[in-house]
Image (cartoon, rainbow, N blue to C red; front, top):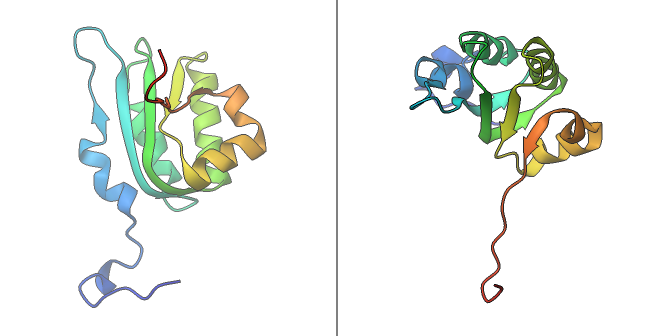
Length: 127
């Protein structure tokens, strides 16, 4: 585990995702999806912040949770996503999972349970 700098030592319990919450929900544009941007680590200390952000989204909108900026997610984060999907009747999409987050979704089988948008890979020269 890395040691915090003196500038951040007063906020040892602060994590990147909670710092993003005030602008973490992007409202829909002309009836589009509502996007919740998650960033940093989603664990037992921060999962409730993600849950709060998702609960602020109107239930009639499709909710997209953009996890492209998430570097770590444990079972607490997964539980919040599953609960939100159940509460919304399946109207939830997880977008941008990569690295360890994509692996944990795959290893747990949640990539088949949750609406997971897989990254598009473009190959030059194919048409």
